Amino acid sequence: MERAICAEPALAALDVEMAAMYKQALSKTTNKDALRAQQRQWLKERNACGNTSGIGRCIQSQYKLRLSQLQ
Image 1 (tube, rainbow, N blue to C red):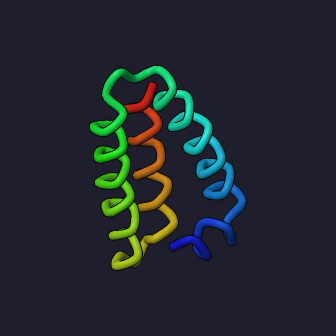
Image 2: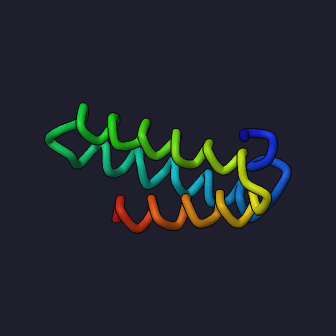
C-alpha cells in the first residue's frame, strides 16, 4: 500500500495532507484514544483498496473521505 501511495504524486500529496490534518485533530481532541482507534480503522479500510482493481481511485476516495471527517 505504501508503495502504491508513494508511486503516485497525487496520492503522496494526500498522504502528507492526512498526516498534517490528523496531527492537528489529535492536538485538539479531548479523546485521543477514540481518534486513534478511528484512524486505525480507516487505515484498515484504506489498505483494503489493495484488493481492488481500481486501487488508485479507491485510495484517493478513502483519503478524501477521511480528510472530510477530520475537518
